[in-house]
Amino acid sequence: MLTIEPLPAFNDNYIWLLYDAQTRAACVVDPGDAAPVVSALDARQLQLGTILITHHHHDHVGGLEQLVARYAPVVYGPHNPAIAGINQRVGAGDSVPVLGLDFQVLEVPGHTLDHIAYFCAQPQPLLFCGDTLFAGGCGRLFEGTPAMMLRSLRSLAALPPDTRVYCAHEYTLANLAFARAVEPDNAALTDRLAAAQATRERGAPTVPSDIALERATNPFLRCAEPALLASLRQQDRLQGDSAEAVFATVRAWKDGF
Image: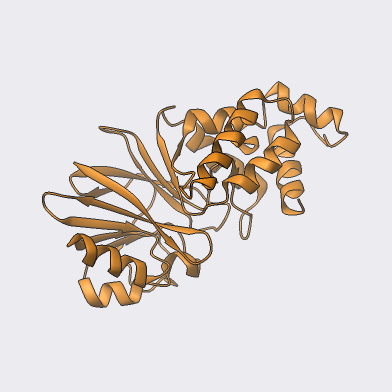
């Protein structure tokens, strides 16, 4: 029985902890800080055997050196030699074994050029997507182009609708506030924002979400939707009808929102 828990780090990061309560084996995703990982492992009496890395930003790899020294896990990550500590470098089409499950590696550049994600199809579709797809949003384009990020997001949007989306930040309320500015008449978005606000008031995480919810409410997955195009046109923000042009417009708007 796989358990998945978010370990809060820094101001708004989530390090994802996966473990089997019977075998006590554990995996973490994007450990930007070692301290919350060590604390959680000790509290649950777990042994860290696997680490998954999605990209090179410090808030995702900052704890890697300390965890490798302490637990000697297998560390999977992208083909980026700048990330010290990875001992199994993987790319598109590779498979990664995690606690008896098989995760497929997806290359999703845009936020960074080395960004990868991990998708497990069975028994419950799971996606660990780092900073590519957020709940209600997507990552900034620090290294990639709009066309690159759009292709990456489309590949994730094509995953099964019930895929659970485990992103790496608690950005949901800010993302949904922007999404509402883009599509003020989206009823599903209005409902999602209210639910997310109630969730945060309880002090609970708003993630994971799922692909169906993202497709219904995330503007960056809706760049070809007539309702979104009509809303941009009504607000005099539409600078081109192609999905790439729409994505670039919405991403630039979000950057300054």
